[in-house]
Image (tube, rainbow, N blue to C red; front, top):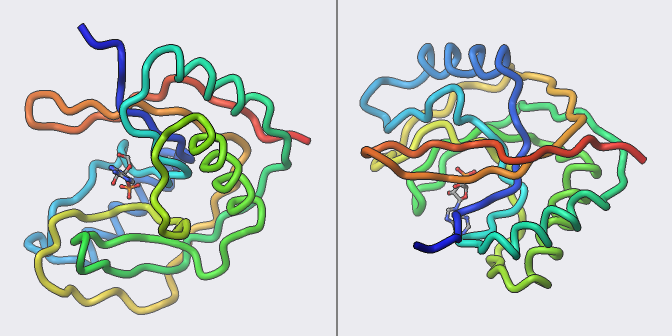
Length: 176
Ligand code: 3AM
């Protein structure tokens, strides 16, 4: 049996904010707009690692544990749609430096460990809807959630019985 798992680093969204976001989504997007991501699965991906062996997972986790940087506040005040990947997302108009620094560090550690990294720049986002086959109106500005970020985590993505489930494997506190 293979010991590899599909892994990614991400920021967890606090439960209360997840609930507020799905309420806002229900209020502003029609049910036929796309497939809504379950509240508990709302996250902000920092680095996608792909299929990773247990050995490589340990090495990546050790490197993540050596990251030293302070926390930051994420202001979720932007939303949009990517037609090509058919997703509607929530994001930030001004990504905090700490967010970019953290994602860049994790992405470069991953690349150095042989995990393929897309040449696309990092676009911080929380996927809200998938399979949005048609253009959907994006709610007017004025919404926003301020999320204090004090830790980041490693997740496994598992697809079982027709559902994707994310399991948090390990987490690290952001401290200098
Ligand atoms: O945060 P989102 O939902 O955009 O799309 C996948 C999800 O991103 C992305 O990793 C996150 C956790 O599954 N993902 C899946 N395959 C990917 C790939 N080959 C990928 N990101 C980059 N390259």
